[in-house]
Image 1 (cartoon, rainbow, N blue to C red):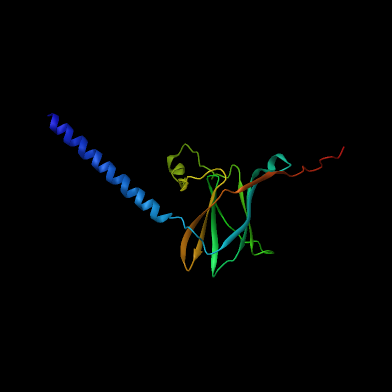
Image 2: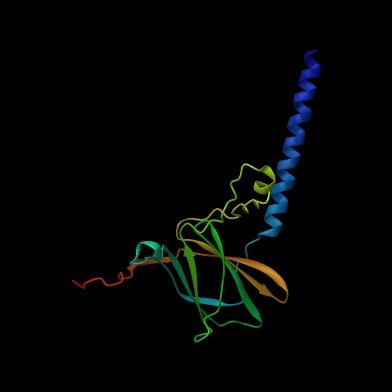
Length: 170
């Protein structure tokens, strides 16, 4: 009887270990970080901001200046402060990118007594990187291949507080 319990425990432990090793190997191959990207980043910083009106919101801006962009590279997403946000190129300055991470940006959830309606909720993606407060990961496309690059430590600038509407008028 004791050998049966021992064998069962050993089998379960082996299966769990194999599952863990396989899942980690798959995770690392998808999100392998590049050592040296085919571009150079200059003037990289983040800055918290808050609107001057209650409904205006707040968040963090990640500012990136790209120089020496070798070839046909397109920045795709920035992973920062547990959020993934698409990177849009500045139309007036193609070497500058400002990525806005708004606080409370989570998706709306359907809460309904009818389970069919609640089933329409899409599970949120798990954040794929373990980053420090002053680190980010950029994803970029090069020759049709998606790659990832860790940046940091990123300089934090003082908070930017926008004035409220009618502030200072009495």
